[in-house]
Length: 313
Image: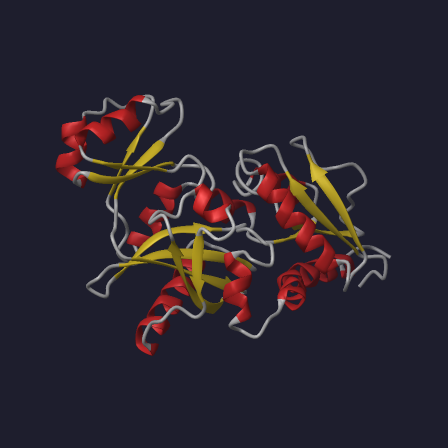
């Protein structure tokens, strides 16, 4: 291995989640530089920063949203042969598309949310939506971060109001709202972490509840029996593998009152501050924040080492 290896932490980006990505990047960089030689880069353009080299750098991404976790940035890194931590371009692109991910998970025989995809070519009738999905809906962009552009609509008037305000140049998912308990579990290099229960005080885990201190309670571990905990963890690992994920990801579920759990989505670059959900899940594996960052980097460093050993001398 090159003794000059540098961990380049990419943060920020130009998506709607830029501020959260900067917070994740700052926290990750501070932890990483305690164990490695590290540099930080605020990504403000859709290019790889100058000076990043496949022979000296391993990139750690904390970017979120478009050109952060949609495979675009990952594709550029792959084209330049630069080792990076996290899911590759193919799985990032797949998981960023919520509808495609649901179809992949449904093909495993797992229960997913009932949904309708709408966009510029769609002619949407509220009565038809209600007939198919009921009158209590979750509306979200098909390709965005997990809480960006999230709406809840109950009843014909509310659904019509949400629909009339959507930008149909984008694709939107209209989902049947699943009542129950919201759960999430991290998957780390193919191993499930602990299951975390999310209890927003507002009743909806939207952007405000997610990022406003004190608006959500988190239970670690989620108060579930051992069998159900194990089933959810096994499901998360199966989803991770089926979607071609590598290194780490977070898988979200709803647990219905009847004890059945329903898949929601995969997040390939979840928030990474000390109070984010992924570190909570890792804590139940005995990993504090610094240890988690070292663990997340390990597979990418191994890929870097293998590439370095193949270089001509």
